[in-house]
Length: 83
Length: 83
Image (cartoon, rainbow over all chains, first blue to last red; front, top):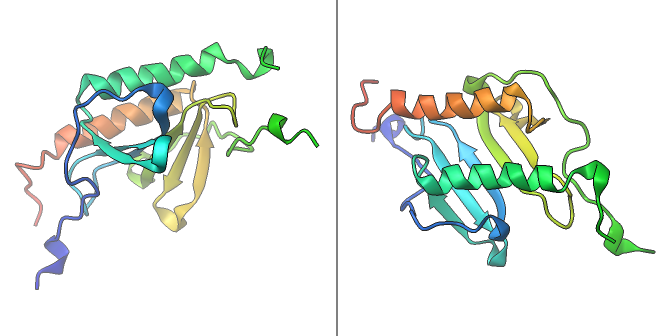
């Protein structure tokens, strides 16, 4: 059995549905490797920890990365106003 | 005890050292939330699974994101030449 040729990607199907940045718990990026020939992007949702594979070339992922960075600068750790 | 005010970020110290994209197993991005007021970026290294927190505004992270995407297009799943 040619085990060495087995491709073991994490994602089976890839979603192009938009992801709300506020519903996102975390985003994982797994670079291409010997076990999977393409980059994989996995979004874990806050609600029930659902995992969703995203298309790395989609607008969804570009918007998400932008939103995550913006979120950061909006809530600067030094100038928190929340209670 | 005002437990609700406890900030629980994952990262304690943040590294500005460059990360070789080839040594990277995965990259996690955790958006700002009630438990941590700023975005966190955690790189897991292939070698012994070492985790390293990166500065989201550093060049390191920008270069890394670029490298991961390039890696993908270089090794298109349809045109593998390896073995």
